[in-house]
Length: 227
Image (spheres, rainbow, N blue to C red):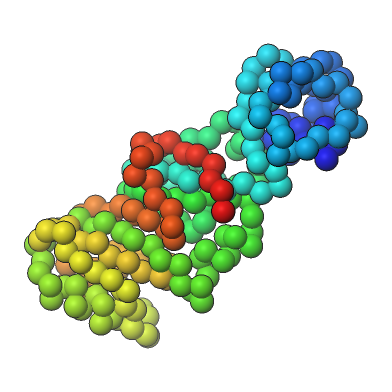
């Protein structure tokens, strides 16, 4: 990949802006100034990137995959209406990239959120036919017993839906804490299922999405992941 194209792929600026930075000795890769726009770059060998002496986070090319521990009070949208966007948690240059959330979490829902620029991966993770599991920790408004778990696993009819929706697993950690696994991603699905089963969601946290979890990642922090 040519240096100019590589720098553009990092979200640094337009082609013209990136070319100016390169030709004016502002770009250092792995500690070495690179000032020829047509230089060949091997993206996997880029360990560090500096622009005018300032270190920048290196974004994997061509595709990147991010695990974010979403905090409460953020909308999963590039155009939020009532709360800050989850994308505001990333550096400025990364927000210029075509990054999309894999599904959505409500503003008050916390936990695992995957973000990528790989459309095929996004589709594969969210398509119902692939049955990718999502594990939620649900804090219930009212104490429950195993009857709730059985109801959720048998299936409930959501409001304005005409087919039964069931959890693949539902276990109570205690009377007000439910662990529930689903493989679909309908709008507000967990909250609607709990409501249809006769209870209410007080707090919702996604513990796992597929094989990914964020147990050691503080709220608001993120990291690149490998597939």
